[in-house]
Length: 203
Image (tube, rainbow, N blue to C red; front, side, top):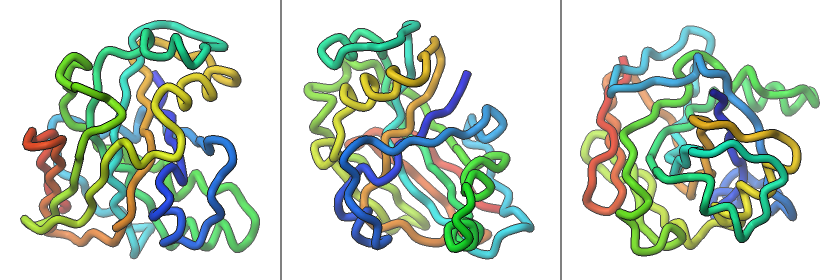
């Protein structure tokens, strides 16, 4: 199982970090050890002083595929979830300034909390539903999948040109605007519509 993450897939988030709007999907990977499941707490790592939350819709791949055409992409997933792409922003900024890869800021242990999944049939339109992140009962991030620069189907088709997709692979599809720091003691809750998808604490 692998975790594939899409960067810069919402215009407002791209602008808030002063990044150019991409012409093609930008993706990177996290190892399986990044997963944090079952609402277990996230323990703030000692190596960073600026961990940022990034709420993301997550697609679970249900079929092996390579060189998938966009029109066939819906056949390759049956479940949609919600997760967090935690980013050590201080480590990322340092790596970027030196022109170095920044996996160190994205791929650390438990940097990819994941909540429950809903069947695709739950959604009237997978490319038009609301999701949000609440921290300590306050809304911090809100988005709708219709705001994606690259749709779910486009993402699957693009990634599969380079990387074979296997059953159980997770695709984090990018974050809307509003990213920010988390602190020890914070409670993070993720929602798709009115459905709570995860609820965990930072310790």
